[in-house]
Image (cartoon, rainbow over all chains, first blue to last red; front, side):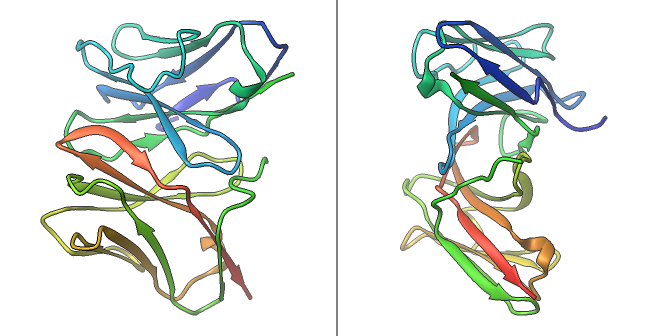
Length: 114
Length: 112
């Protein structure tokens, strides 16, 4: 499809396990973002990738969270040793370039940590 | 799908009426503002954006107003339809840098 694709759409895991969430941005978009949305909350910025520049990791809540973007396209958000408070919807967005370009969102991955 | 924002403020309107959703933003240095619509189980969908050098921008059935003096943003939806029922988020950004700061959201409920 032409939009941002995220997988899996749902993930249930046990506390203490590691999880990987995947994002395929819109083709040609150089900027990619991860946000987290807890129930009843707005979106919380996690990390931002722009081309070959060093990512902005200022929103990552702890060192259990990490993300990488391979080849300037697909990105993976990894959460190690998951905890119940990590339960949320993780949203990925992409945009054409830095500067004021619209961020287009995927449908998100709903993570449930039991 | 899972409901978004179970405890959000709710605006209830009749089908065909105009809706106004308000947002107070936090950073006086913000120079870019954007509205998203989010339906249950889906990601946010772009509606309209505005830069700080403007105070009004119109799209199809939607208008965004920006009042920098009081740091207030509003989204007006004309002739509201049942398909407009969703949670609406405003977001702000600063300095050409794409990290957006999102508001908590407002649920719009359109009644026939």
